[in-house]
Image 1 (cartoon, rainbow, N blue to C red):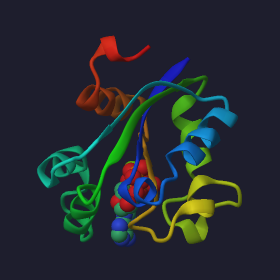
Image 2: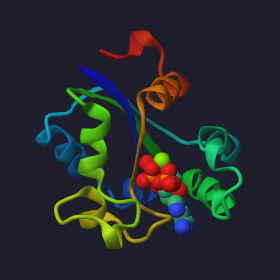
Image 3: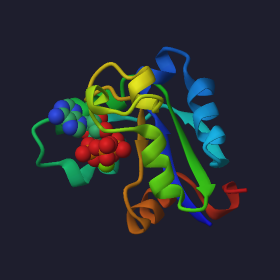
Image 4: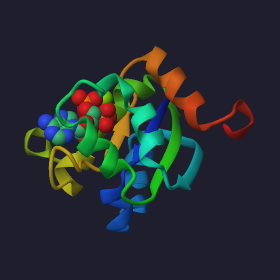
Length: 137
Ligand code: ATP
Ligand code: MG
């Protein structure tokens, strides 16, 4: 089994979609083994997304991630990292397959409702950024 870090982004929490998004994860066989709703500062969002620091959308991305509450969560399952990214759909909702979270709920490439870790090493780092081992049950 594998763990991945998921974030339900502010565009989705503002539209009250947390439950509908969690249902997509659970229907795909992913188990929510840690979860909390928090408000990030812009600095915390910037630290989390620092790999994108040189990208032209970095400042906009950090502003957005600090613009309202997020739900951070650890998802568990066989191949959880890849499975979660499948359920999320493509980064740009216009390219996302039907039935994916981004196809159903997201309004733009910037405000695309969910984040998911992209590899085992980043999953470990991202989980540790938000959770202690004792919080993952
Ligand atoms: P995430 O890392 O959030 O799971 P991703 O792995 O699908 O998404 P990345 O390439 O890692 O996509 O980009 C990180 C985030 O930056 C995207 O989810 C999106 O919110 C934002 N982003 C990516 N490309 C653009 C863009 N062209 N314009 C605005 N924002 C963008
Ligand atoms: Mg990414």
